[in-house]
Image: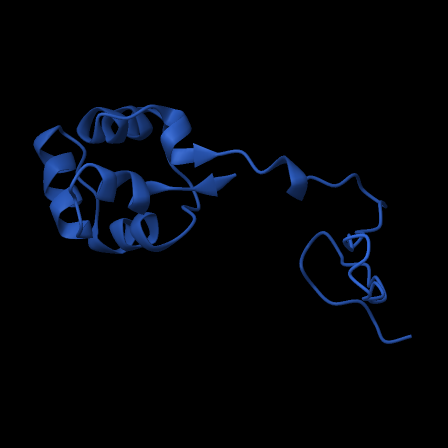
Length: 109
């Protein structure tokens, strides 16, 4: 999922995290500066469903505006990642290097 809070807020005329933080507090959702920074600048680590409701009310948006599915990033365990090359591009596909699910690198070959 792609977290789309900043763009959704900008579409509603909210350009600063502090503006959104104040509006959320007015609706009963008090968020610390650190958590607000995480929500504003990237992917939230965790978020309560009730908090999502408040964010949607404040921004006048739907959940689909905040969370955008990215099905192309879903891979089955053990499935190699493939690189697609446009037909006629004249570029050979680079060697596919499998990645561990936990983000750590594999040992050298």
